Image (cartoon, rainbow, N blue to C red; front, side, top):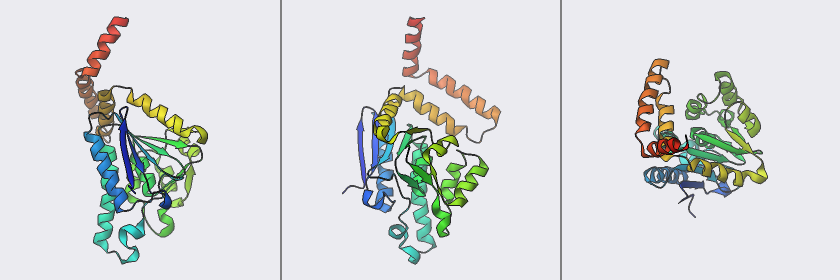
Length: 252
């Protein structure tokens, strides 16, 4: 059975975690397959939006530590390699040229919460939850912390990381951790409609907007505004913008 499913239709690359019997826990095969699917979708000229979803009841239960590190028998080098493989996936999502949307049902925990947090947009079913339980087993959600810091306030982040509990989707939306919450019965339909709406936008505008957002992260105000000036000028030279300006002129 393929642990990662990947298909592209209507400008949407759908990447599905497909290990439902293990709550889509991240072993080496899942991490490698996800990385490969992200790389293929980044090079596919027909892709405008990437949707990461999951089979079964849960989005992802996090790292399969026994499968990845052989439990307590692993050494420092093996632990480092495991951490880096997951970090590569998180950065592949962040650096992907197109918007990446995570559709979360059930639980997104640990590394699963990291995959969702690395995505540009998170859509969640009303019954879903997201959490960082690593502290409960003496572990640190270190890579996820870097992403969480960019989504919520510092004190809220600290509470989420040290409590070890999961946050229900409506609360996660209220604190800015996720974007949209849809009723369970409508979840799949609403997710499809949401990503289809994104895919109908200008591909160049979507990509350049994402590029600008993360490029200016950490910049001073002056440098961020200057980066905006450069991106503004660049975006006007795209074919999509030229068509948009021409159409706008005909309407006015």
